[in-house]
Image 1 (tube, helix red, strand yellow):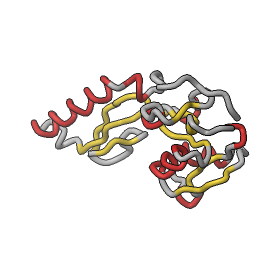
Image 2 (cartoon, helix red, strand yellow; image 1 turned 90 degrees about the horizontal axis):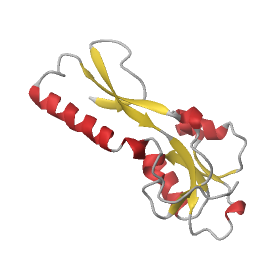
Image 3 (tube, helix red, strand yellow; image 1 turned 180 degrees about the horizontal axis):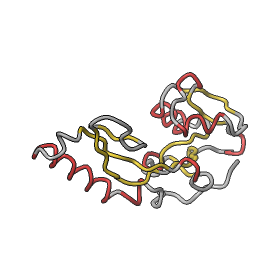
Image 4 (tube, helix red, strand yellow; image 1 turned 90 degrees about the vertical axis):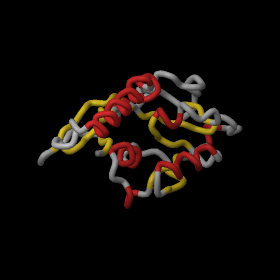
Length: 155
């Protein structure tokens, strides 16, 4: 069982739509002059996800490279630059502010993918129901509809 950004592709797999996940750019709220910030990006060698590749083709001044979204988050929090991350991460961090709108071309549908044979077993069914409820209850956060701070103007 796994959460993916695409439905089951082959084999004896089943997929259940969980919800929409959106991405935006964030900066540290405490940075004195945000107009001077470069971008924090994941190293192209690790750029497997569309959101990671997207930043590299935008022509922004990338000043720091990281190896994971968790590192991007920490570097942005520390004021090292601007970073693209899922709204559910950036919007929950009171030290960050969005800069600009949601990046529509990075919006993705999330799926719970599992073995078709197992999905009717009671423990698996309970897990599916719990995960579905978590996504349902947090849909506005996942969709970027609940920023802690309004969009900050920069870049």
